[in-house]
Image (cartoon, rainbow, N blue to C red; front, side, top):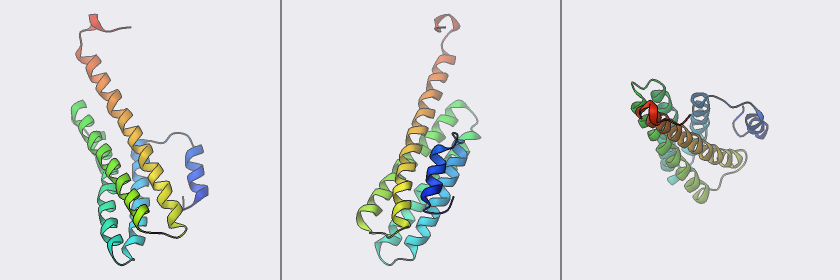
Length: 147
């Protein structure tokens, strides 16, 4: 998918569900490319871009760490950090959108990244809820589990 490509975004939504690790990695790559553009601009866009870069790339790093979690609690904890970073990334994208007018194709990509940050937030939230549910179910005695 090309940076800022509408066709690429449409292909992603029409494609089969992707692994969260792959999706978070692709998101980070797109964040890096947008931040490279922001870094070329003078003023506060450069500083905001650095904040966005830290948060946006941290989502994928924490998802990867979660996959290598030493326990279910560790898996949940790392995904919770990834969720917080996705929310923070969405905030920085909103702030950049509201304070730094961008031209195409950067404007479309900014909007696409905001949507992807929201989707990653929902996915990570669902992963955490289902993992907590499974942890609670495995902790209760078999006689109390519903079938």
